[in-house]
Amino acid sequence: MKTSALPQSGLIALTMVLAACGGSSDSPAERELAMEDAAAKHGIDVDVTLNDGGEPDKVVIETIGGQAGSGLALPPGFPDDVFVATDWNIMASSAPMSGMYNVQALAEQSSADIVSALRDTMTSRDWSESDFAQMTPQMVRLSFEKGTQMTTYTITENGETHLIQVVSMPKP
Image (cartoon, rainbow, N blue to C red):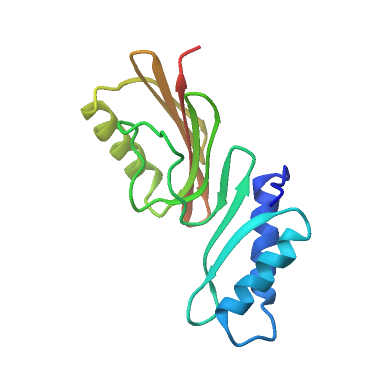
């Protein structure tokens, strides 16, 4: 299928609207196919999985260089020593250039708990903290370096959750 170049947030919104609309079919499999076909008519490659109650369980949208949706995996080749907690809900995952990885996730922990876990885990994996900035009262940035690599986490309050953006790449 053709992959859309629309912004990931627009793709997620479109798919959620499609999922919320449902259809007249009682079969989740038929509803999934109807939603996927509707998205395909707009050039969007999406895989929808509904639970037994007919609610979206997983939505995966193929984008240029990655995926958007909910409950995604890390991008292929993502460094084993870069920390991403298993309970973070990965909403976007990509490897836009060789050696560069971008992950966006939602976490229920507090910003202080996330920062503490990042510091503890990354330093235990031989990464050195290179920068910490409280950019706004609702946003912090924490960066690490190891050899020729750098990884930056940006943590932003998002209501009762926190949005975490992880960028790992070779140093410039």
